[in-house]
Image (tube, rainbow, N blue to C red; front, side, top):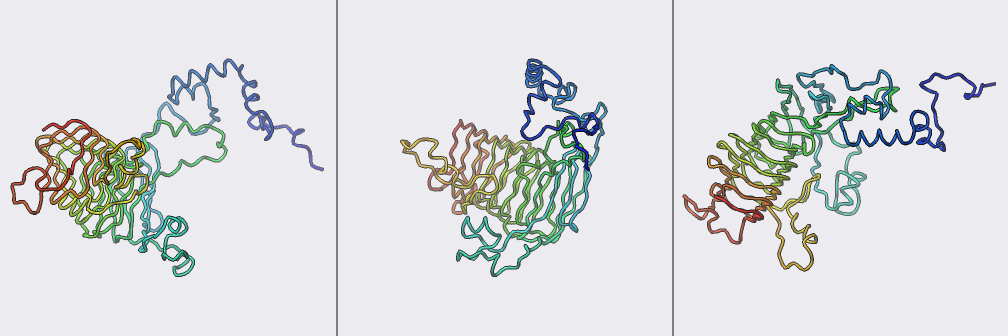
Length: 401
């Protein structure tokens, strides 16, 4: 006959095992401190949110020998990389201890024709029947190409993509920290004080073609992107574009999404043809000879929202916020800059042909004289905004030369 587990002797680590109907909160409080002490500790920790005081008072609980904050933490001087899936992906441990996966993914050749079809399968026939179930293979095709990642001395990583096509996208996503066996109920203090943004100081597309480069919430660009293929890049997305960064493409970029801001000093963004949508969540600052150069048009083809970014019709979508009594029109946009545009005297923002949809600036425009839009029907030297119908620029703040 088995012995009841309540009669067995158990170690102190397993002494407290509340059932589903037990009052867990009361048992925790009464087992160690009074309710008043419990709330006082909570209030002090809320006022001082650093994880170290929480670790000192052991609230939340920290199991003995669990990974935690050390007085002499291990310093990672360079990112660690591990190739996985035969070169289709790379796992990265950044210098702050955060984990990422840099991976090539497949973009379908078939344009989805409805939201329902897009949610249900990667392919769409337009007939209401999912192509995944009828005309396509049961296994999702693999992306073309391989990716290599190399650490740099400043803690950043450089990325090289070989053999990719316009059906291949490069994604940078976070990986969760592994929970060590036996410590599921111990607070993970070791995960505190991490930046959670990978510094990417180089992206080289050797084949010339790539469908997308995406690190919207997880990667800061601090070095050059080189993609000289003539086929359009559907989306380039980063958390921020910092000094030292540059972008050079041979063809169109449908959407350039930046969650925070763009700060260029002495380097340039050169779009080989059209930039159909520029989304920037904060400001653009160009200094020390930095240039933002678009060879042809801004906003030639309207773009739908991608990922967590906005689309070309962002102003129209937000018209209800302004109020139904407003008579103002809300056009689609070719550039949507929520902050300011600052161009110093040595720098330029250049559009080679025309602005087909407005450039919207939510803040101030500093360096108005260095914003140039060239028209093909006007011989050089061109004045600012020559012979362009309508107003291609909407600035909410003040404008200064």
